Length: 624
Image (cartoon, rainbow, N blue to C red; front, top):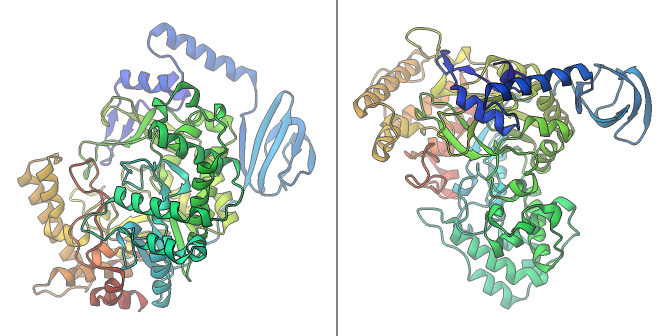
């Protein structure tokens, strides 16, 4: 359909088996409507196509131009104001020697954002390290969940033992009204930090408080249990921080922080979903709060920034960027003009046979361009402010995202295309300025151009042991580690996949059968899992990582990490879940309350983890 093509909406796609899947015409029309394009009748389609053709004849420049340093572009006559305030007269085309940065071009009646990005990032260092779900990494001092002081202790220990990188789950702010959303991938805001990760005793206000107040604070400590209770943690820490508030020193918040803090205050009174607030409060431009409670929430973010800065102890700390936000939350409120009324997800695949609906609104590509990609830039800057690297969850979303119209199942969606050169260029510029490593999660149904573009710009892709098969061969054999890509981060699993012990025991099959999310019969799934286990054992023996006799699960897990070490992948990451025998995966996609997603602590405390012989053996192999 020409109209769909003009607006970047797919009418078909290739699935994970490289087979063509046609999208239902009514789904295409629904997604076009989300871009304010009417395709409901043949007459409306013709009218919309006429508008597309008319715009093409106007010969106007796009609202944003993203170029790589050294490139140029014809723009006509105008004036370019550089980021540093200097002005350049432009006669015909942009100069090829423009500095990196965010510039503004005035041509006729247009004001255009011009972004100059580096051609590529520096080559990332070769390293090994850890991938953490921080909430799960607890010590005796933790208040019910791992915190930023635990992260500082972990990074110090990791650096002392030869690691060069620690990847941590998204630390984005949840909606701070109970029930607190447990998923770090469904935050209220990607621009601010989750205050549940604060170590209360490590604040300046605690140090300044009198002994009686400190004793009251100490008495509020939430205990460590066998499930992480985010509501209990937040109640305890909020009460403690409110006791310390009279001893706080608060810097003046900028406009973005003030807006976020304002959202938190309104949510306390009117509930966590801004879409149900009184009409006058539903857009931030109508709201002007400046009171003590706003300053309290701004202070919490200032505390988070201080503790994050102390968490980088000798290794690169890489922060994960979630693919989107809860539409009811702070970013949904603050950025509602640039977010679509749809949900991001994924089509059905082998591990998620019913597809996925993540409940996260996508960027509208047209509105991003109109706003000079600044909302996207600001999210990147917020994460990179406290990081030595950034992992882009579902990096293929810089090219296209699976949009699911509201009220539809994930199988009734389609892909919407983005300007990948612009999205990548902005990412490259901001990562360059932060001296940051970029990791792209390019798993699942991903077009080859995604991985190729990442590698060309020295951004790392993702290699997961469970997925290393030759999908073009009829029997889909495992790929030996020597043939894995070099420009990649290698790991055994991810937070959404079976842990190594869980895979070996078939726990992922048992749990999915128990809660009713299998796409095939239990017998078929068990046979498939057994065959996969046999394939991996054969590969481990072929790589001389495992002998011919019987081996324990712990021995097989150590050997699986040897596959990573046999690969040319630039970064090798270990998950504590894999090493310490945890059968349960952190998150089971396709479930909400049926499984304890994001609530499972590690079975060992942080000191016990550091002393565990299985951990030491894996580290010994990587250090060697």
